[in-house]
Image 1 (cartoon, rainbow, N blue to C red):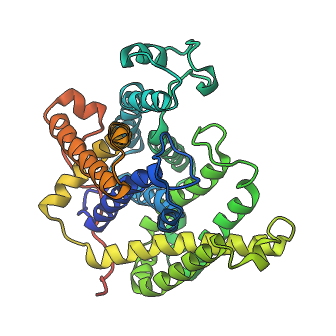
Image 2 (image 1 turned 90 degrees about the vertical axis):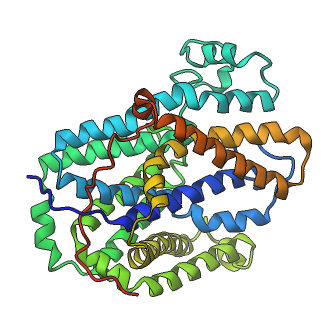
Length: 401
């Protein structure tokens, strides 16, 4: 059953755009941060940069999955399951394939050039890249050869999660169950369930299945991201939960800051009296897990609360960004890597160089989207909707200033 009585919740659009903006800055940071591997690395690396990047890498991608789960729930009230499967396939799977074959290829080409492993032209490399039986760079191949999705793993995971949840809701309707829960499930219990779920995933899967972004063997990330995605779907259908998040956003921020502080203290060795027992004492490991999981949810919900309180109206830049965010996401990492590789021989100071990389990446994304939105084929290939139709209902709570 569908419902057409909707108006857009602009706070979700604001938050999604802002988080993708942080993602672009984060990937620029990956070029400079010390000890963290990336496709290419600057000659100048910084350990201090880790402190700032640790702030968002605990929750950044989870928040995008959470928002995506909310949006799917709202759209599912307006559109049928089959309509949504078709829409998500066009919006996610088609851009994923195009991105893998075309947009991501220069990233691997530049990476191999930077490592001194190839000297061929890009076209010759691309022919090998799309050939699943190529003998080139065998150590970098997977089951499909050199073809990869790099940063576009998010599109692959989100598409699969959408299909799984949509099929599941056809078998087990969630709305009657959630309607029964709405009056009984308090916000504090819901938060406890969310933290405990993530804690169990963290304890059972994190070490056995380290992050690969390879889809078929990435069970820790699936446990984390799919559970967050599912909870976003449920969160959207229980408006009293969002009302509580808005009301308690300051408390959530305080908890988040405490968690971030503890993570930094541990990173710099100030909690050695605990960390030395991490591998041998289940209670110490559990304490770490509680801190990580609480920090994860506190940041996400605090940001949800603040955006719902203060970012509730659209403006022309937001309308542009809402439509452009997917093409910008698809293009940005290729542009970052290309700009960084081009600037590397100039040996410019990292501060000035990073500003150039950010500016050139933003300019490239802007110009790329200007071309994309004027071409119907490119709109399909980059997941740009013909019309930005509303499928998010009006909030059923009062925002708190």
